[in-house]
Image (cartoon, rainbow, N blue to C red; front, side, top):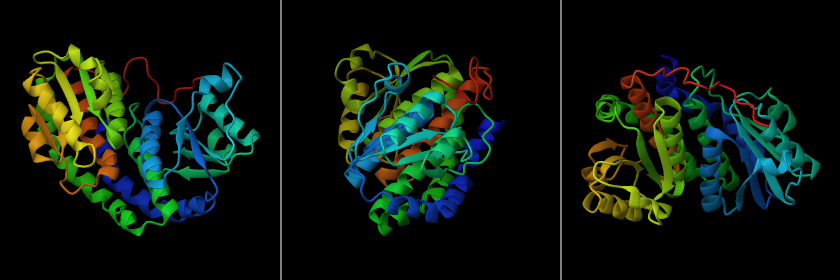
Length: 343
């Protein structure tokens, strides 16, 4: 049961990464004072971490963040110009050739480069000018859990250090305790998964910082349970896809308190009252939880900007339990390997 064990390792892993990476990230931040934009290359779970970086570095650090299309670099051999950009590669293994090609091109164009990886000795780690070792430790299960949350933590710590923001650093230091609290929902999540054992299709909604959570939860459902899980921002969802929701259609939603909560709550009300949807809601807002068929409660004092690091943990558990009740292999899903080498 390495997947279940690795989900439960996250409070300790987050605590260790906070302690061990503080000085290194301060050094990286001091070297980044002249960057004007950030260009990120990633795939899979790491690409969902990049979505979080797009919002966080944009909102808190006021930096334009672009997500790379690696095919431009390796298949079309026609990369964009990247003057003034920090080129970032995010990869748990640090091995994917197409992401590595973006890093090479950044160096060819004279851009500073950063690898965020769980293996600093990987090709990406030895190529980049700066390396952020996420320090997740060995992750045996194919589905990424602790490597994802430590990637998010590294992104959050760099955001804080770029502004020397002590108040937000204090909030980050609470993450391990918040992660431990969310794991107390384990039995509730396990019982909820039983209800959805015959589910074949669902929608996953998030917005703002938790747009990344919608994509990562969707990916976990696809990887582990083979459910067709479509992720959307709550805004995009209302531009057409909401029409497919009818009585009993499962909608997974991440809706913590924060700037986008009023919009998320309005969508939840519409889904329940007008579409009779089956709502699974992760939130720290009582009103949102009361709308849910299956509510999953987050710690009430979780700051919105770090909520994706906490909200994904119950989503991981839900996906794990749903795979178990479907009788599926939680450790080695069909057709997948731990390291995917795309070209």
